[in-house]
Amino acid sequence: MNEYTEGLNNIFRDIGSMNPEEKLAKAKLIFIINNLIKDRQLNSKEAATILNIDQTKISALEDGKLSSFSIDRLFLFVKALDQHIDIVVHNKSQGSHDNKIHIAYA
Image (cartoon, rainbow, N blue to C red; front, side, top):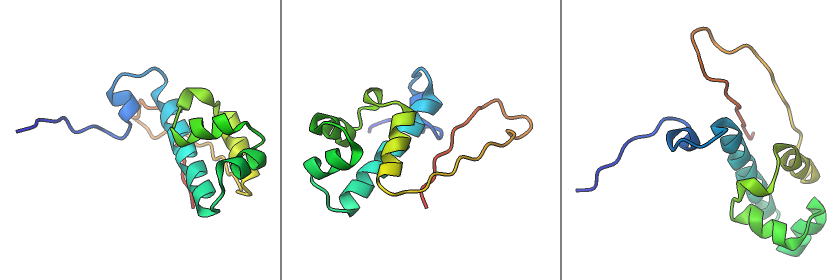
């Protein structure tokens, strides 16, 4: 029988990565960007033109290479794909020790 440990809400924290909240936010943004590209049925050349990057960077997006992009750059990609971005800052709940970054796509 295979044993496993159930993780919490952030795989990057679970495995002890540095900056787990940032990595999770980047992963979510890359997921959104890849879905937008897929929904528009863009090939890699078309996507690269819209995002103003080389086709090799499209491959990095498709492969989920987090280290290839800053959060700022990922936000620019989302905007280039005609999406509106809202950033909401609020107090963390009392008793919470986590400083979370939450990314949602509606």
